[in-house]
Image (cartoon, rainbow, N blue to C red; front, side, top):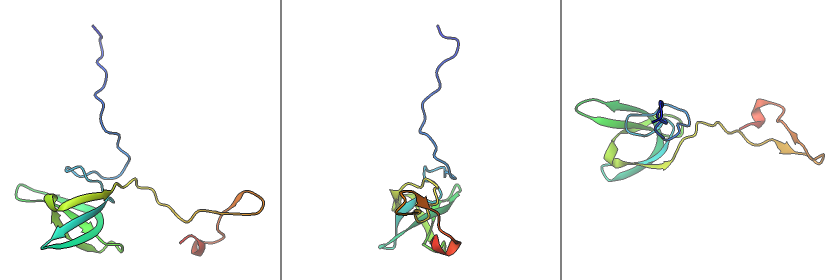
Length: 105
């Protein structure tokens, strides 16, 4: 009989704030309200006895609205990586970093 039991395998967390509903801040979702379908990113949640809702934001992080859990569908999981444009390759065979911040985006 082993003294220590092996740990229970759980889903690996990749970073970010996880809501109690399984969504992660930054997840790309599709949400429906009053027959209109919106696409945006999870930015917050409300978890009270009366309501459980997710806040969905647009590209400029302006809130689109709060949506009930049954009306939100995950499209792409957030991995919290900030990706800038890749460094340019040169004829010398190695990459060159952009010279100033204006070249990044």
